Image 1 (spheres, helix red, strand yellow):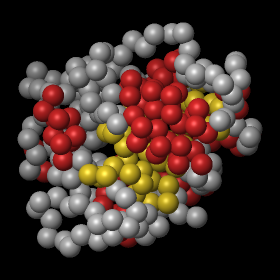
Image 2: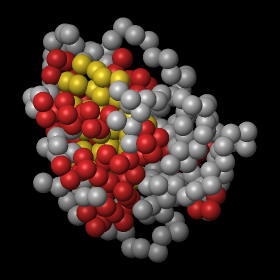
Image 3: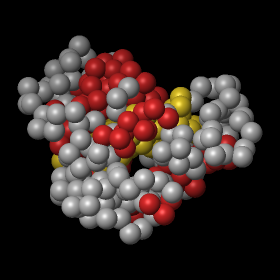
Image 4: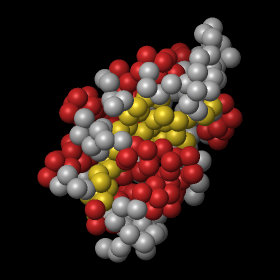
Length: 273
């Protein structure tokens, strides 16, 4: 382990596909969040599950634990309870956290242990070759079918992780995008600074199993949340825009319900005390 002046990158070369959004998350953590916070490597732990994004502990020069599928959150909680002085981050994909591991999340929320949970949401199971995940967009929602016909076609509506986290009353909820490294790095910083359970949903492309128009549409329609400024709503919305207030969980829930291809919001949805 090195000191506070470290770059937070190991010498290992990532094996992700060229253009994968995981590169953006890696840069946000190692070039922005951890250096800006000034936390020593030896006081930081990255816990992951199984999946493309869960390879990330090998590329970050901190303590790391590549655990089993869906179990990053309880392992991260155990580490924080055993060593409260550690900065603990749990990282996993939408299948890892929101399918096999979803049962752990409401209990992490109610315990409110001081860990930061980062879900890398690429709308598909990437490592196991393109099956639909709990967040795969579904044609019954009025969205274009984005899953290629040679792969599995979704038969169920998507689950909204941000809405779910708000409904369980998590104390910090944010959403970022992997292609905006400075903004994502800032969100991760704020999540780590927050004393309590923090959840950050990261919208990211899967260049192998999602067609380019999916993420291009998300980027084009994304809107940034800024305190006190009017929020941008989807064109189909009948609501009147309101000033963004991250302390108001009711307003945050309304924001989280915007369709991901309608008006994906980027920023801090809710931050409690």
